Length: 161
Image 1 (cartoon, rainbow, N blue to C red):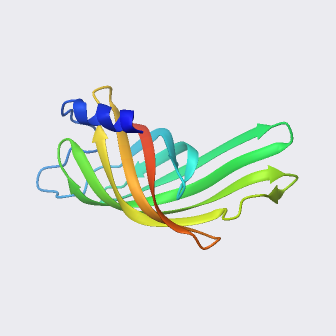
Image 2: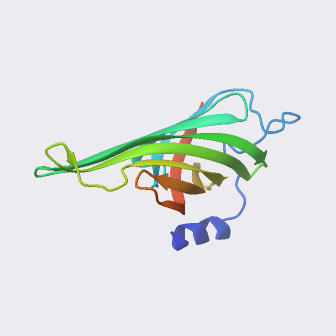
Image 3: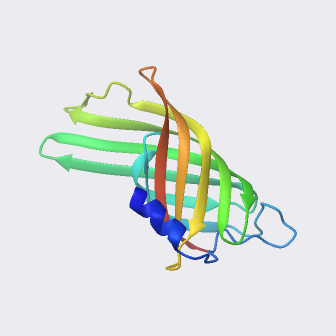
């Protein structure tokens, strides 16, 4: 994670499809933008990710992943809603909220103590020179076993119109 953060800081500013603001539009966009990639975090799940930036300051993300080894099943499914607080040609800062469900077990028996999670917090997204965007969130995450922790989340997406 530190290496990824260092790479983002060292890389020079590069405009990305999503973080470039429309003149006079503030944080809203004029058209929808879609993204595919990977995302992971305890509040919103781990796996393949689909993002949709609406023609407004709002966007949403759906995340899901499955692993099956022998008779053991591992999966997570979740989603996140984001609201742009600020957007510049190289960066987007947003408020985020999300939820997920994790499963790890055999024969339909979930062995996790807190499989349901809900989180709220903030995030930042920046474009990479390759055309991909990287994002990092810190969400205060509530686990269904009663634990509350501020935890990081990461994502890497490629956007298209």
